[in-house]
Length: 249
Image 1 (cartoon, rainbow, N blue to C red):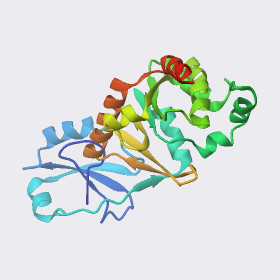
Image 2: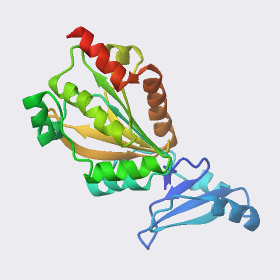
Image 3: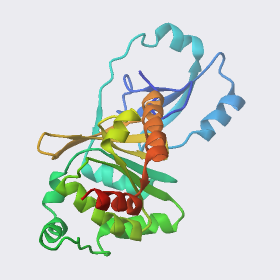
């Protein structure tokens, strides 16, 4: 059995001993009470396709539950990651900390920026279509990007590109790296969805995305929520930041 990874205090996910291969949510009570337990189960959300809920006495979990756990990262493929941007309910937010991304350097829009100093974009790309759909539904999508002083070429590209993100409703903000360090922000790239699920992005030394790790443990989600709040507190809008960069050139 593993501790609940979806932010439901007092709930435990059972991952072993299930002959169906699915996973069950267990609601611990001192005594099984059909009415009360049923109401609790009815309030559960975000079940997986093969997940269900059962009720067991609290004493069973205390006496037979695991005393120590070793966390195993939950990695997901890119298609699963992509669907998070279609299924989130309220907010999707990212912290970007790297000095460049291999995917940007391979983008024709980046090549256009190198050639002309201005980035191009296609508003009919699936990413922009979906983000517009989400923001039109009053959902919030935003990022804080950390930039060096002076910014790298890749960071200048993203700063120019921010106007395209903003055109479909994204809230793009910036923070100088020295200010991010003073604020105690980690050198980690992640998305956080609905303040309940984190997608931690792992890169190699050449800025290629290696894998995507999902974090749903309450303590882990709270940690990244605190990072988000601090970043948003200290960051400024992309156009204000662009004006700051212009004064340093």
